[in-house]
Length: 61
Image (cartoon, rainbow, N blue to C red; front, top):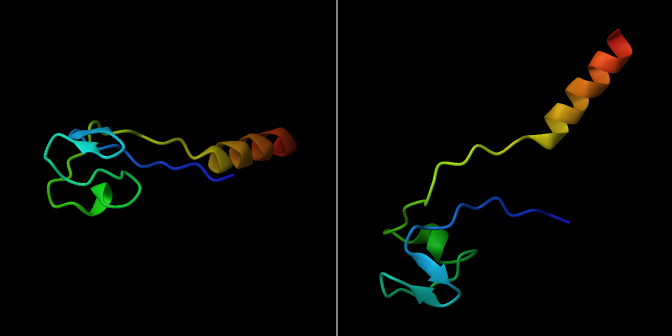
């Protein structure tokens, strides 16, 4: 299963409801809207990288 890592727009309320009066589909139009502004700057964790580093530390010791 894939995990969507899109940060919602600060104007996005719910599906089909945008405070700017646009067609609010977060996975589609919201990311391409010229009024798009992310709610927060989010640092995503690279889980594959953490796993590989953990495995290297186990086998190198």
